[in-house]
Image 1 (spheres, rainbow, N blue to C red):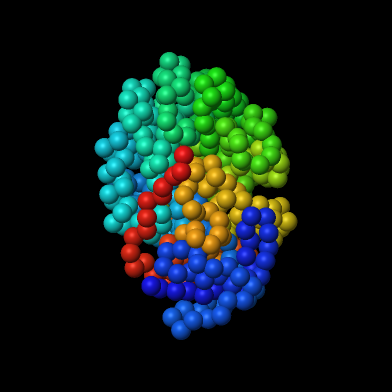
Image 2: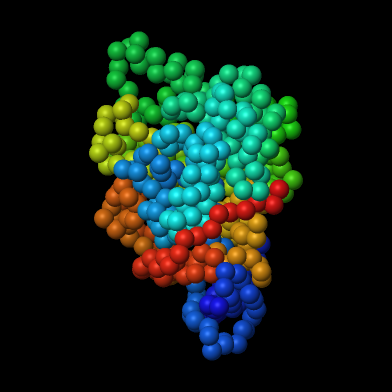
Length: 443
């Protein structure tokens, strides 16, 4: 059985910072102690001065398979993810065809079990007519049901009150929501039409507005309280929405909130330079909203940090504003953005670990992951805080071949990533010997 001994790392786990050794045996963490004697079979990793964290669990990605594989696929994007220290992901249903049946959902698992470098689970997409499929979800296997309570594509938009009531009343799993009000967005757009003005990317946060977000997210929270649902509101972008959520630790909450790395990094001031490359839904908003999200992480009103990784081709992004698709690739550089926040004293390492590893594991009930604990799966990331990473389009591992961070120098480096005990990234090269595992849930 393979064995790895990581020596003299600085471990960040469960609010504590300690210098210790950690031994991996097989797929799991066998021992954590101040000084572990090496054995003949150990592969030694000298980690003095480096930070050892549980791998990031990304609860919101779009890997584009099946049907949209010119943008990305599970093989390519999971490899970019592990190079960025993300060891598990939960993938969204807006592919082609949409993942709106249990059969389509299970087809994704079949793809991932052959190709994914990171551990995985998949959401079923809600429609106005697929309640019986939602009721078939297995809480121990399927991460949740995704409800687009606002603008979406295909058959995934759910706005009818009776359909939403039924989903919130009947879902056997966590409900996760994209919250933007389509009527408010349409009303905002109509003002440009009435004036004969063609909207531009700088208008995006006014079209996909604060009010559009709040109207929808407040409705979701109202439904969850009405039916006692388990609700997780994805990618909060506004200060106004924070009033909907409780401060404090995640344990025991029925309603939780998430922020995404790009909304913590960019603001509306970046649109003139980056244009459609940072077009996303919900939109990147004001400097003040961004600061409020950071405050929400400190207070505990925001429980989880994710990516909403959503690649499109360079050519698609070069179209005029209204035709350009929304979304950007993020998994390879997400954790690096958060360590930059740490270096700039906006967050602590302990908060990053809590919001990217511990809390996703708690909220979803992920079995034996998300913590540095003996007996848990060895999903780990080793970070060199004294090195740096310069990012450019050509060096990114995304299938789409570009990154919104082109030219940026991050203040740390991913030195290694382990998934289920295997060192899948050594800081320079990917070393994937076998596919990863489906996540399982204890709920």
